[in-house]
Length: 64
Image (cartoon, rainbow, N blue to C red):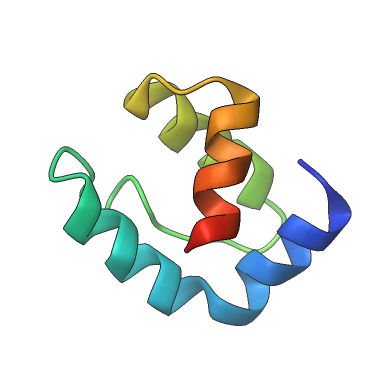
């Protein structure tokens, strides 16, 4: 994931998490638990669960 996108996640994760849960009802709090140092792993798992390509997921996150 791009550095800018990663920083964006850290700054607004609670809001992004709520938007993701509202948009994709298959996502749960457990899927979206943010831990320092593990954000890339968490985002990769979310991307896989949604069945999105890296490009699709990056666009999705940028749009949130």
